[in-house]
Amino acid sequence: MKTKIFSFFILFSSIQINVYSQFQEHTINTNQIVNAIVLADIDDDTDNDILITGNEDNVVKWIENLDGAGDFSIIHVIYETPFNVGNEIVVSDVDLDNDLDILANISSYDCGSVYLFNNIDGNGSYGFETNYLSTCGIQNAIVFADIDGDNDGDWVSSVSLSELNESKLSWFKNNSLGDFEEQIIDASYLRSFELVDFDNDSDIDIIGFNLDSTTNPEIIWYENIDGLGDFSKHIITINQGLDYYSKLLFRDIDSDDDFDIILAHDNILSWYKNDGLGNFGFELIINNSSFTKVNILTVDLDSDGNLDIISSGSNNSINFYKNDGQGNFTRLSIIEDLYRSRSPIFVDDINNDGLQDIIAYSTVNNQISWYENSGIFSINNPIKNEFIIHPNPIKDIILIESNFQILEVEIYNLHGVLLYNRSLDISEEININISSLTEGIYFIKAIDNENNSTIKKIIKI
Picture 1 (cartoon, rainbow, N blue to C red):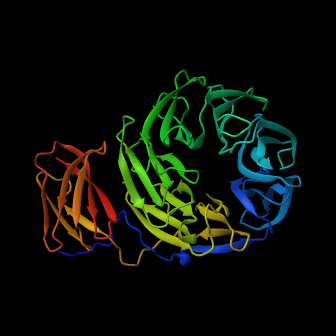
Picture 2: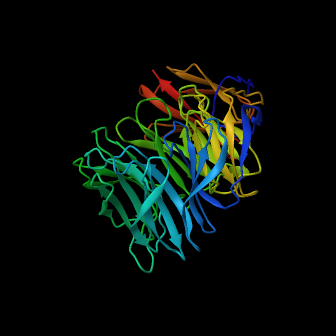
Picture 3: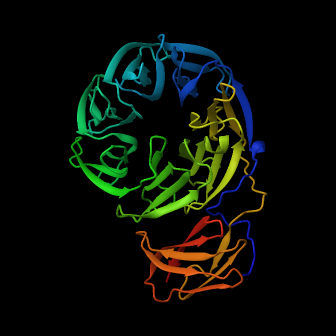
């Protein structure tokens, strides 16, 4: 087999690179356990403040960005009650008075509610607590969007089955004054979900995965069929690796103007490609090494116009998966050994320099830190599990060169159907005749002797 490495190729690989020089650490002392972090301009002074929920009585707080450059030294308590725990949190102007209100999931002794805190002066003073969605089941994310097209912020959440309540997925209709009425969508627990216009009909749909004891985990699209919040259920696929700790995102990661599915689950970070018609192919693995109980989000961290992936918790690190714009990723480790499973993380511009910074909470030392982005990204380490296809686009013969031993090659179409499989002698040069395939987009998977796989997109002409 020929061996050749081109370092400018971005790939589905699992490499470990220290990029500490790209980020400067700033520590914020809070002295409490933190369960969720959000960045938002709470006091309307054009910079991002920190909003957190946590344990040990100080349940909801915000930390003021004093100078717009990341000086966080004044803590404001919004809500504190003994034996309460704050979890998911989200901000939105629910009463249309041009300031940011808060919805937070707060629990005590395994039961809880979603609390609404109204920003009463626009400067970060909060009052008027209102309870919604009281339950003893597991509550998940609270997500805002205009579900019924009346130009105010509604929200969606879901709860699991418990001894005191049934599973349900609900949306809460806003009367434009910040009062909400529950509308039940389905008797199902949607563990992780996104609100997006899935079918490009100018209304908000729901896509996520369920965790119900009677079925295998399903990735589901709830179609907003009338634009007013009447939903119809469509099952996209089944993935038995999904569990309580899994996370789903719905983003365009290959720059083809449609939304793809991103999953973190069962030691795997992966994505499903959308063919542009709402059909999804097989699961494409980004990284499959110790990837469990993590938080993930997408952001253009390196300002190259492509959506990258950030994770916390995998290998006790914050990791950056750099996207080449086609859904091929290179992993860089930003901070190591401080961020355990499901460490809260958020990304936004903290110091008003136009770059995306990272803020996260470490369960190792119980502190919040934000990492200032210098905007300079370099990759100097050797790339593992790289293979090169030429030519591409391809008419007849694929030639493959690699820097690892390929023992098996598979080719799939966009729908995940296996079209070609070949076991290889480790010494042979790889030539594959695809003249029998019709014109279109395919995926080629190379598998090594440790069953690690690397996937690339090919175009048949």
